[in-house]
Length: 480
Image 1 (tube, one colour):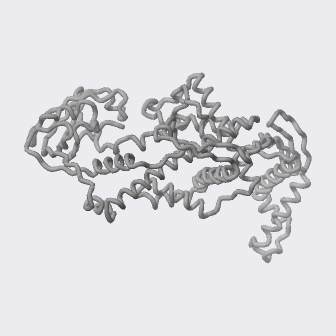
Image 2 (image 1 turned 30 degrees about the horizontal axis):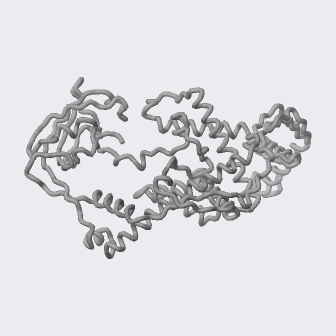
């Protein structure tokens, strides 16, 4: 094998590799001998087929396999001899090959940079902590009560806060068409809840059971269903019942309905849940502070290929979050947005490399049990679909590997925190929640608040899961 260096610029290397025809022929013969041990051919016993006969029948088939192996083996040897660590899969281009001739190919490689890990032993970080008080428990219980609020029929006109049971059928005014989802039966709607598009609920205030009313509305211009966005519609509504909410009382019966022995046990469970949420945010803020220190403590060139992939991933995330707004069009970024996103991508790649290096040098491994717990946690996000989630990860190695990265990262962070000097700082709930953006990996952004909307989308998970109302059953409903 001969190697000629064609380019060496920063982290980029390009070399020309020549594997001699003699070596190729030798590998082909060796592979044909292996094939001959099992192949069955008329007139020959297994393992006794002459090499020239094997070459005549299987030479071309074996050649493709041998060439691929020769390229892979020689490339690996080049990387080892030159002590190069590829950042991404090397790019191979065969320049010349024919039967009986040398194999000549070029290999372009972008390598991982050499860098020194900052001394993190004794690094000082601050962890904000909050203890749950009675007020927080009371407020949480009040929300539970509201969610489980009961109601009873009343013989009067509906007012805001009442629940109206109704049938409705809608049509767009300009063409009189009832589009998919523009009807519902025995639907319970709380007036004033803003579950339906603006103006719908207001027109039911003052109506009684047995009333039939036409409700005129206009779908918002940004409505999720493009065929209805910005159009006027009329819904014919049959009011079947008016119900008045009745707030539940937090007593022993209420606690037992929720599966607890008494009110004390219910309060303890609520307190534990709230504390768990506080601790999660506290951990996130501590981790952010640690990663900010690592970001400031390391400055080295990152591979352009990795940077491009990360930037592309961020753009895809933003495009997915703006799907309704883009309406099928390609996402176009302003210059300042693109600059900010590239800075985020660079930070992510650099921090990922730093944490990976720390983990590898300290032999931090992910066990099968830890990975299984990650799969279970992911499945729990989809109630009723757990079996499908398990099957997805079982049959999709790439998806399973995507769970491995954050688990590995958290173990590395825990390792660093054991050696760091962590000071707990009591704070209020408001302080803990301040500038609280959900971040769960080294894909974290800098703690500075983003200036552009693109950066917000790239660094903050969509709030739709936490803040939106349940999925609408009809297109009369307002999107969250």
